[in-house]
Image (tube, rainbow, N blue to C red; front, side, top):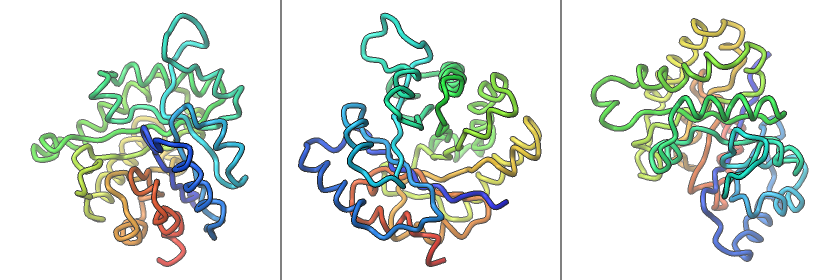
Length: 252
């Protein structure tokens, strides 16, 4: 079976107002979307339940983070169990902003991933290298080091609920984007590593999506690559062009 194309929108700490939120909802609800694509948006936690209720049924919502404990004295955190109870099906984990700004280690990301899956969530698992690491030809090494704690923690069957998001840190919010060839090479390396470290079946079935300044202008070429199974979109997910990105495969 071919892997279902996946387009996620990471809103980060946006939109800032209820009016902006209404505009985004209106654009998505009125758009003609490729029904073959799984569409998931990740708003700030304060908007999760509202957007789940306002958005059309073929668009899912995702949290941007969660903790690995089910409850307790963890001020500011959200548990996987709470997300499941709120009917939020996905969570983003390991985003480079969490790794760098909040000093999350790959081991912590693995703990969170295990807890999220055990609670019943699906996970968008982010990995990616810095510009210095890419220039030192360490992309594969860095990405594998980020994946290894997760692989060591999970069962093979867990991978049915994971989407890997390859997001080169140097391309996030910078306007720079990996070329389609660079993206394909990194995705193929990820699939090869999962083949070796987990199993060929998991590698074949796990979606590997690209994130890093994805726009309507560059998404179509990226979507033609055999190992690019979709996108995790940042800034452009807040704009009408997000619809064109969702429909990228339709015109390739």
